[in-house]
Image 1 (cartoon, helix red, strand yellow):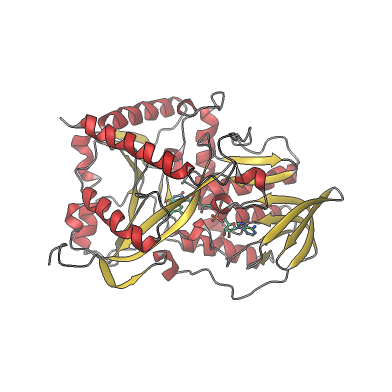
Image 2 (tube, rainbow, N blue to C red; image 1 turned 30 degrees about the vertical axis):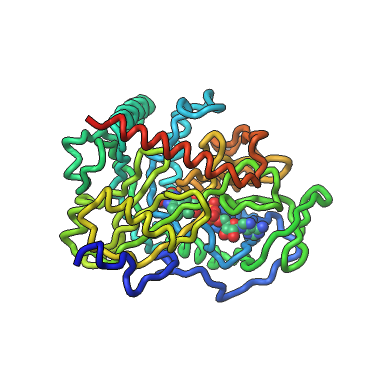
Length: 442
Ligand SMILES: Cc1cc2nc3c(=O)[nH]c(=O)nc-3n(C[C@H](O)[C@H](O)[C@H](O)COP(=O)(O)OP(=O)(O)OC[C@H]3O[C@@H](n4cnc5c(N)ncnc54)[C@H](O)[C@@H]3O)c2cc1C
């Protein structure tokens, strides 16, 4: 049956993350909010839990406050791709941070990956971690040139795991003719994001860390040298506060709301593929992230006999739901993999990422509030790292906690509520991507 007569939606289609088949955010053991804690953490995902675990290791009690069920945020909705040094954004390419040491960013990316692997090992987290590498796929010849230059620059700073692969040689990595080569980051891979989250949550529970779910922080005010939080459960005082709300940052912290731009990202999962098809699409089981400004990312999930492809991107700039976006993502998917014409979609979902104006991660302390924010679309390892290091800043009372503890820029053009911002920027970037592909045609 061909794609023209067959629905793209599988009979079992669900508009929810595929990952929730294994761990769905729920609130089996609701906890009462304490009245006073040394550290209150707003946001109960990777960054929040990693911070709580680090504090606990140093004998500091923290309470994690989560508006929804534990794991409701982006952490159980992602592609689960850990790009290692492939997710480092060269400061040379961004504005405002030109004095940032590139080597420090590379080292931070390595530490982020080490932290995730450390949690997986120590806590025995079974989250399908597969370190087969990430292929950063060039959508245009000039992207390939830029990626090669970046890989060369990285090698000068000791990053030896990035190898440029030309278009002629890419067939052994990907069963697609869409790309113009790419760079393979071998010290990278993919995992099941919701199972990794569940592992962190269990680690917190084993240590007696309070997780107050279905509890929204509504107000935050200074109080006797510390903070008073008004939540939907009542009042709580804390010596320190960590904001770990990323793409879900709201009015309770207006200074952060205007520094992170929430962007919805969308994903689909295919039905189970034949083993031959899975090998054909991703012969080495790499993860793939495109070089385009509006990127697409994909990977296989599961093990032999039970593999699907999960694929994510954003096509439209009006606020559509994940089922409406699914056919558009499916069309993008077929441009990369026409051989998937008969394969149906079983799941479609979305989640918020947080963009920053300088495209960099940020953590530190501003106006007395600690924060770990701004994943820019790559947060599995990065937010684990930011959460851990911001907790270390509290423990050591240090000046700087990470290379991302620098000026957190804002713009007078973005106050946090402009509805025009995302569609205008999104369409502009899409146009530039389209031009790059057009100029590439022989
Ligand atoms: C579709 C999609 C695909 C992605 N793919 C990848 C990928 O392949 N690789 C990768 O590295 N990253 C990826 N990411 C990014 C990654 O998922 C995120 O960066 C990461 O999960 C963010 O974790 P976090 O702990 O900072 O915040 P989140 O997981 O977003 O959690 C923030 C939490 O804060 C809570 N909150 C907000 N306000 C309040 C309040 N007032 N009171 C209490 N709680 C509050 C929210 O309810 C939310 O649960 C993807 C993201 C999406 C959406």
